Image (cartoon, rainbow, N blue to C red; front, side, top):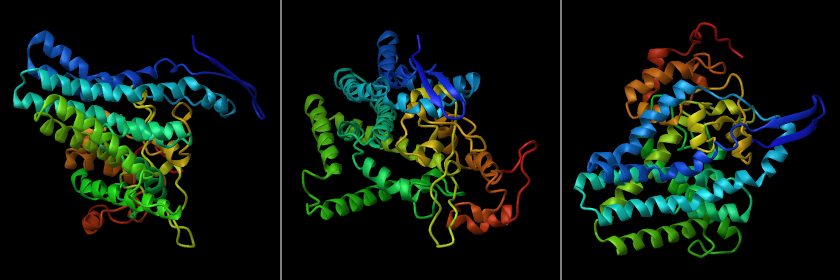
Length: 404
């Protein structure tokens, strides 16, 4: 049975709400254990190719289910959101998944260290483990936006698995302030491939995190190289974890962990790339950028992948109200909508010409853009070519779509 929430609304009167996804959110908890399916499949069949089964599920089955089951545009009534946010069941899920990320990586490392695998099978399982640890960054994302001391520590701990301890600082105090502007290295520009984007985003995130954390510590009269540095706290846990794996399973862990870490980081880059591609916040009369609004993020309501990612794909509401908990994130009409969930969009992004063909017309057709390239975050290297191709005037909207 689903839990019932009851509240009084000033306009609607008595309001009742049941979260029909309440138990389905457990998918976000167990999904990080998916590498064990590959290991079980190899044990059952003897085929090393079976280790790639999790990739087939993530990038084949989940996008198919998203297409078949479709979107969920249901929103909880605002009157019950305080009750929904206070329900500790939803917090327990994000807390419970933290140790499972460690279990998944240690399990993959144990399989590599104890089985006679071909070199390519080691790299295949490292890739699988890396995509899985990329989910740990998503868990850290949800926890890192919450103000409690416990959740802040859990965020640093889970980010130790993919060696991405700078993320909470960079994301919360950096990306959220400059999102969808040319100043943000974590916001992709129209005409910029994911590979060129990565060259800005990856080093830019580390630099900005160190700068912001240094400013915070110096403001409190503390040194940057101290136990109070939250980035170093997470990195220290990474050293303990990954050095322990090397000590336990030997030199094979060096290439395994190198690939694992790189792929986990690439997962975050992939998410950043699709979440804000080409979107631009307008300048206010004083020269400052307008506050982030829901239409400054690409959104998707595809049910299955949202259930596997703690609602990360309802990114528009998240950027407008960052502290809102995942179970309360809302759908809004007239938002930039991705044609698939993230597991369908990532492979599309890896083929730049196909990504541009799908996403550029969709970007230009947005109600707040209407074909005007001055309302788009353009790649400076491609500015002239894009203007030559699309012009600066309003492009016709798809049939049946009206401007806001």
